[in-house]
Length: 200
Image (cartoon, rainbow, N blue to C red; front, side, top):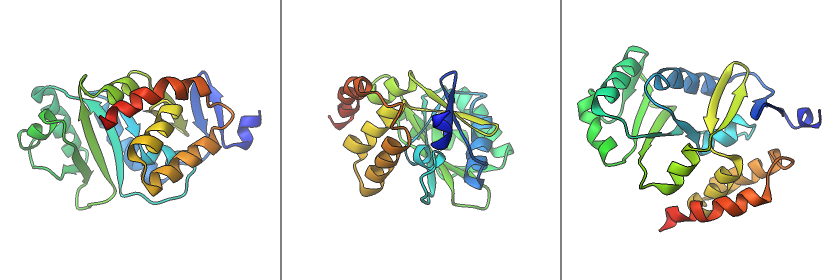
């Protein structure tokens, strides 16, 4: 029961966070409820730290997903639109699909709002680090909201060695502290070369 003191418990490899949902959680949940109908995903970067208790603001939530066909993207785009989202890059799926083919990110926010927004980042097998983390998801559950993130050691290493900004290093420090009792040195050693491949 020691994990309870840290604000989470492990239930069958799912990290269960002991807190109520915030407005930002509900925003991300609303988006993911649509996205999962058409694609798998991982929530990465700042929201991982925020969801585990780090107190800081954010204007965007980063989500990675594999490139999907135009037909499937049209269905996703239309469903998001029906559910109250708009896209920064265009008013139709066709307007935005070139960004996806180029592996560029696109952003969605609730209608009549700019923030918070979802930065949807596409990847394919040429992006080795993203491909790897996507294939090794870690589940987190907050209340009734379950979502997928990278392995914690991977997320920490990515923030420390690739992003490496002040906010990212503080996020990594928070994750190291919050999950100190379950982090594994051998995973850091395994993941580091994969993470560093992003720098090439």
